[in-house]
Length: 399
Ligand code: HEM
Ligand SMILES: *[C@@H]1O[C@H](CO)[C@@H](O)[C@H](O)[C@H]1NC(C)=O
Image (cartoon, rainbow, N blue to C red; front, side):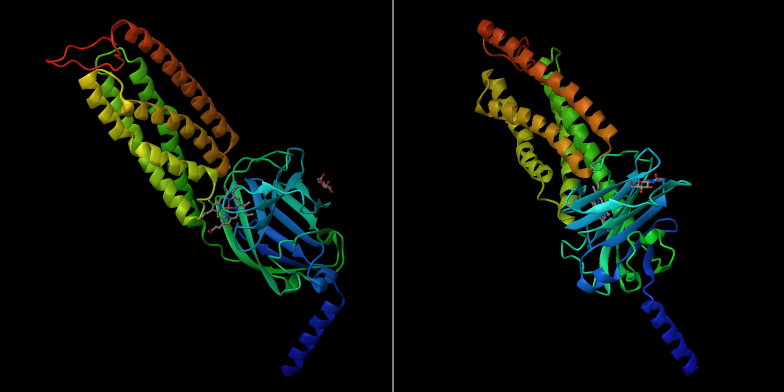
């Protein structure tokens, strides 16, 4: 027995000495696999060229691989179909948990063997600066990596900066380098002397990710409804209302919008704080909006009470009016920043922009029209701009 074991050991040592092209494979699902080859020279110096291969069915919009234990400070390689029978390999840098941005400094070169065949896309490439971040050393025995993928229609884009939306599956894994070291081929995946070894890790964490993406989806829908639909409509009603109950309709619409906004804010804060993503423009403007909107209902009520007594705008009226106007416009813009941060699909960004554009314009027209009509009235008969609903003691003033 001992003799046999020694023979086996000697045999494997001599195989290593032949310097075959070693490929370490990691399959993160039955059909999504990543391969790595570290040439002998790179393993000795710790940096230099390495070779990577990504392969996955075209039922994924994109598939990506990143160096490091999380999305923070990760050099990433994202693959999608280019629409011409080949793939686009997009080298990117990810600073945190948001869309990784194209990074031309990463020295990557797509190799032959890449392409789309039998509904499987493959990117074989050389990476020259893969150890640049110091997040991994190719002379170590292993390293931390992340992977992610998004199911859906083929992206079919040759643009390395194409907008990609958030993964529906992502995780980190440890890649053993020891069985990936060997050889000096300049296209290891096409070499004939390859030895492929590796494991299929059990992936986890995807449930949590989908829970979080639901939270942020509801956040986006509620906040968009509040800022591009209901807040502006409530504001237009008070400006143009020529019917008896327009104050009441304004109040109910704005309370409804306000509740949507508060719910959206809660979800956004929860998501941003637990995910440590609060230092972006979108969440910062969001906090400013919470501060602005917090006092709006009270300011509106105080204004209304005073207006009923004096029939004139007071300081609190201007506060309520201008805080509201600024917040609505800022909220519309902040929604766009949020979509950008989430890497939302272009068609949703277009839908958002169209609705925001149309309603935003209608609102601006209503403000201008309403103020002109109001100043005409005030020059005739005092400064009545708010339509007061009829009450027995007070006869309604005309709008
Ligand atoms: C538009 C592009 C992307 C967006 C918006 C995005 C956003 C996010 C967010 C919000 C999380 C936190 C999820 C959570 O905490 O559960 C996350 C986690 C993660 N992302 Fe991304 N990401 C993008 C692209 C990528 C890419 C290209 C990769 C890999 C190459 C990747 C790898 C990961 C990993 C490994 C995690 C941790 C998953 C886990 O906790 O199990 N992401 N991403
Ligand atoms: C895809 O592009 C790479 C790099 O230009 C090339 O080597 C490879 O042959 C192409 N694949 C196909 C199927 O055309």
